[in-house]
Length: 220
Image 1 (cartoon, one colour):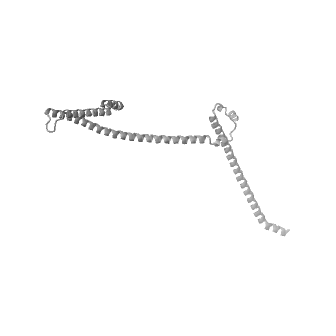
Image 2: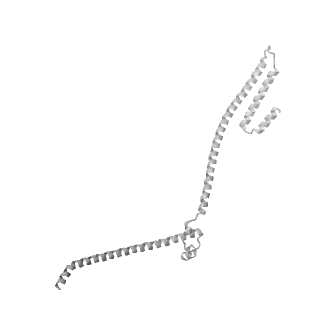
Image 3: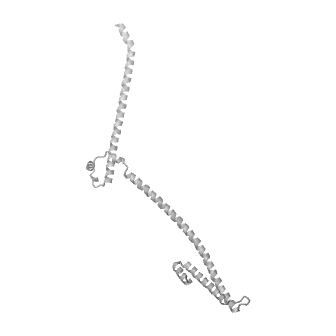
């Protein structure tokens, strides 16, 4: 395949501007090498003969051009190595960021799955409020017609609050009756103690009256 055809196909494949400049410099260097080879070959002289000054100057000029192209290639090669290192570092950092984001995404996925499980468990949980002996909805609405337009959730809260207030009232009544009971028990105990004390005083009086009774018995 001719060199020009290969270079054209390579230029079509490589689209990066920096790499295109490297290829262009490499092409010029190769062409300069070929020109120098052709010049030396065209002016080949026997080893015993000395090249003319014109030939030496022409060869020297071509060599300087070749050295210039080779210097450019070395610079481009060094810059390419630095760019590769920078690209590798950037790629490594990007890969680390991607790994971090992937791990974060996995954690979010596991958290989502956990939360969905918790939500399902809550939906299927046998809540205690469902077992409360609430009054029927019809009776509740007769007592509180302002809740007629409430949705099911708001209605349930209202019925639970109604049940709570009713139980608080019953608890207050129970506490009042308990205090009254305790007062009656204390009053009965006091009366019992008073009766016991009266029995004791009566027995003491009877015991003190026995000598007097004996005196009367002797006289009569």
